[in-house]
Image (cartoon, rainbow, N blue to C red; front, top):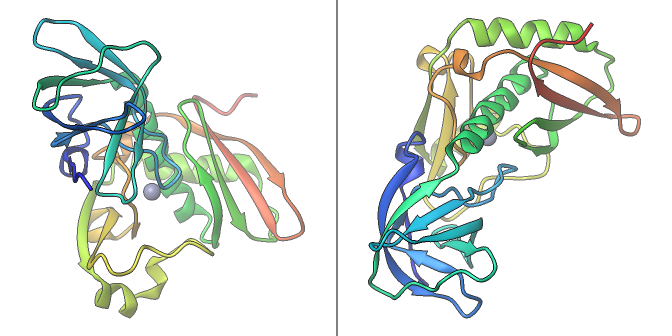
Length: 244
Ligand SMILES: [Zn+2]
């Protein structure tokens, strides 16, 4: 297995970085010693972008995924791209406008779990729209939720990551908001994404990339709340003002 140093965990604002080709897998996937490309997980899509060779030519990257473990990050080239040499140095460029929207949306999803403190049954972060499913039977209207979300956005709360060990997570079971998904055990450390001074607004296990303060999310609203069965509500978060 080829481990990749995930630079995006320490600095989610790294739109470019340098990396050395560590391996090319049997399907043409490119593995580097380190990367700023986020790999699809936790409902957040992986980065797209390009790798620039020393002669200035580009290798387009269509997807970024994990290999056998989360320590392995595979850059999947688009069709008909040149294959770099193992040991070659590359300049890595993610599609930053897209990633920044995903960061804003991912942070917005965390705020929604503060406004709606119910068990999460599913979530998907998107560039234009995200969805979060909750195990809840209460009726709640989208104008009220949108308003509460914007109070948290306008409060400009800091967002930061903190690592805890498994014992601390065991001692605070309330940190886990997912109904069925538990953070992986056995890795020793768990990353918490915290919102607010001293995490006063929220903290939950998450390996995603986030903006550094809630005001960066910008104007968002709940586009739709759908009833998915008796005890499930699906919320769709969109950018911009609530229409009407
Ligand atoms: Zn998250």
